[in-house]
Length: 213
Image (cartoon, rainbow, N blue to C red):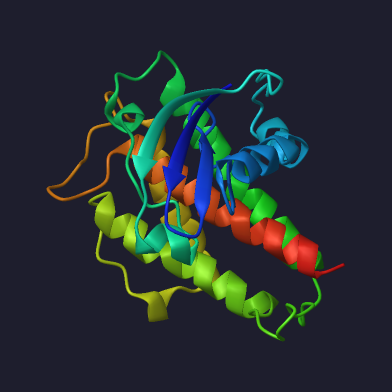
């Protein structure tokens, strides 16, 4: 399994570069890699929904790139770019990535649908409840739309139907990609956008699951 490592001052992210959205963090590189491997069964559920066979050899992890993190890394966001993000795409990659993105949205909605409105709090009593997390995840589409050159969406206009429409547009951009290059100046290339987008949806879906127990 090919992995990228993003190292901040207090947090390290391990990213499965060939599997967009499969990304976990830890206090150091070793713990980040251990957590990444441990989440293989949870990511496999999403891959199955996407019709994608998850077959990485987690017994053999190759760190292909190490990049320097930032304050965003320490805050909890895998923010850095890899050379991998700009490399030539493989045949069929964008259809597969779009399927994973669409499956992540479906998975998130399914988790929200069965979760209690009030979630278990953290050790210091913090953490957003279900509806606040859902609003946060849906609101992220505003940034994705801008970075992908789709539209300058407004968060306050995000009805259920509008959220579905925006998600569909983002998935369509990925599905119809050819070389994965940015669609607009200062925009995100598609590997980076998909990696960030799928990670964000799944990270909060898993958070809701864990805090519902």
